[in-house]
View 1 (cartoon, rainbow, N blue to C red):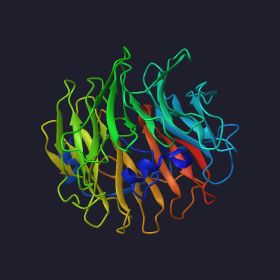
View 2: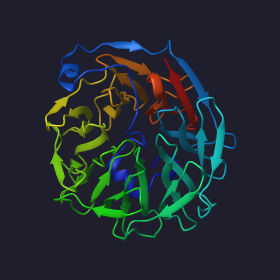
View 3: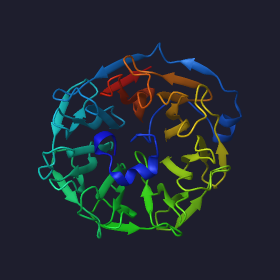
View 4: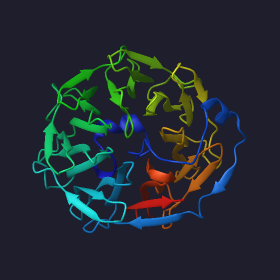
Length: 388
């Protein structure tokens, strides 16, 4: 998850980048080889229309505020906000700006507890996690009519900071996510629309286990992407086929040290995968993996830093091949981007410019719109929507 609700276990996976963003936007694009071969250009996105929003009741102190995370084809946004008591609450924002709030009844009401909505499908079904009064995590599904179903995969821990992290829901209502057991080992899971849960491990996974990607990690065919850690804590990407077969992949040039390697980030309806790596210098780069397994490196974002935890973090790819994500500059600040052969910067008005501040696209909406959050100079979070 993100912000104050980032489980300790997740710090291994995103290293110094506090992002729940592994999904974002752009304009028209072509095949990955042609995109990677094009000259890198940068255009400002300033001419697009920015809408910023805060959910009423969101706190105004550090690590409080509004986190939009998911959007569907109708432009309905879901996410969560953190109130002045550091309690999380889910929300739904329609494309005309109307806000509905919701909470899982069993969610805790204390510090760093509450409801975290993460993903929404075309029908309006929402999945995410809630944190109970003992600070354990559990999955939930909210139906379009508001009915909430709770779930945990077999073996999911009930101890503080562990449990179920429900990440993504597809158009059929199938859910993918991760659960963290008593030994702090992560496992992938698939919950089909009829409620059956299958837990899976990537072959070769070591003590830190298998993690399903944030955001768009499962397509309508039930193909899932993510990453796993080997016995030396090196990361490797994986794709899980609908029948359960898991295939490993590694980006060219990926680092081979602990907490370096390859992470699957997002998957298209046809099975093309967006991924990023952490190289031997702990700098990130973007790649595309085609359905035949060929991996192509994407250009680095102009303006990215070259230090530890910096670089280019592509986070989502649309069905048309549109790419978006974040790059981290030399000061450690976040800048959103879209890529269609050009890089288009996205910097929300009011975004801070210090380390750990800036703009984080979180998903792709209809007609090339981008939703996400930005972190201001006081480390408070705010929602944004940018339209063509």
